[in-house]
Structure formats: structure tokens, C-alpha cells
Image (cartoon, rainbow, N blue to C red):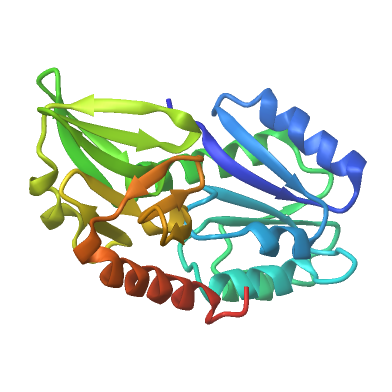
Length: 240
């Protein structure tokens, strides 16, 4: 089972440690990143990076509500569970389409329920459907860093450095990826724009967040720059 990538945003170290301990003992596999402030989360956030946000409401500086308001401007889909000692912001959590509102101290059963809902949402996200060993597999688009055609195999490069081979053709993928933030930059490569760090014009490539370079053919450079700029603009409209 794929892990849930979770952002834990909590400014009290002991509370963050307690949440991490419960997450580690959960029946749902998780991979967690802890942020001690809303500013820290906003500085690294991009759509598709996390499957669930566990967000403390009362934090110094940017509050949990304000943080999610800014995230919602660029990402309407990511599940959010607010964690707090008070129910004063229940209405705000509904306005921001929160998955749940958990009171401290959070119980294991309540947390498990949130994780299960997030897992189901992840399984039903837009996905690339490919065949392998006679079976159809769904790969969530947010998990894909880039696609590579190598001889007769299509290599799907995923977050965490994993790579899955399929006997498919890259040329057959545009229909499935239509309207999604992917750019076919080379006859053998297609990059996921949310995972692009920058464009290296000298090397003519996308520099990906997993450390790999994805080549861009000369005639596609202008289109690649525009696609990446348009994606960045869509991200920053909300002020992240």
C-alpha cells in the first residue's frame, strides 16, 4: 500500500511528537513531514506534495486557518484536518472544506478515521491507468515525477525515487494526461510540472525535485518555459 504523505503543522514540539507516535502506530502507512509554523509549510507547499494536512489552529504568526486559506487559493483538493483545543473555529473549517475537526488530545480512533478517509480520497484521485502483468494499475498523477520511454518500456518515475516499468508507449499518454499539469518535452520524456524545480536553459532540461534532469528538445524550449511559467503563476495567484 502506498503511504499517505502527511504534513503535520504544529508549533508545540510535544504535541507534534505525540501525533507522530500515533501516526507511526496507525494501520495506514504514512510518511510525515513536521512544520513548526504556517509560514514554514507555506514556504514549501505545492499542490500534490501531501495527501493530508494535520493543521493546528492556534499557532503564533500565521494561524492554521490563515495557512489553509492561502493553500486553498491554489489547491482545492488536499484534505485538511484541523486540530485544536477549542471548537470556536468549526464554521471556518467547513468554509475551508476541512475533512475533520479534531479536539486535543487527539485519540487514536479519531485519527485512524481521518487517515482512512484520506486514503480513500487518494485512491480515487486522477490517475494514469496502465497495464502490467495482465492487470490494470492506477498510478495517482501526483505521485508521478516524470515519464520516460526507454526502448519498448515506459518507465514511470515516482516520488521517493521509485521506478515502475510498463510495456506501453509514451505517445499513447497525451489522451490520459489532457488537462493535467504535464508537459511532453521530448519524444522520450514527459515531465510533471509540480515536480519541476527550474529550467536549465544551458543544458536544455527540466531540473526535477528528485534530483534528475529531464531533457527538453530544442524546438520545445519556448513551450516548456511558457508551460512552467503558467503553472507557477497558477500556484502563486493565491499568495503562497
